[in-house]
Image (tube, rainbow, N blue to C red; front, side, top):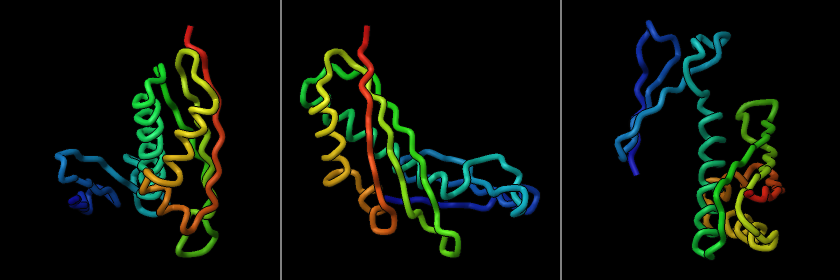
Length: 142
């Protein structure tokens, strides 16, 4: 895996472009009080978003492989950080909203557990500094 992060220059404040080996790019920036212009995600927001994406990807894939009729998945993450540097994540709560037809709570819970314990590299790394909690709700598709 490769990634290059490039500062956009003094005219851009504290904005950076990250370009990945898969050919995608994203802008990151800082808060105005830190010299940024607020034109992109903060780097730690990017870490949190990546963690949510990693886990949601797993949950959908596991449910699909189990032939469950999943049609939607959303995960909201609420994180707390340490007060002093390094300001690592200390708590992260994942709330999943999984949509589908006749989804069984046991299947959704199992998919989340498999992601948490085995497949989601990002959340497994985060668990080294943060207390990770999960809950979910199932939305029945009409």
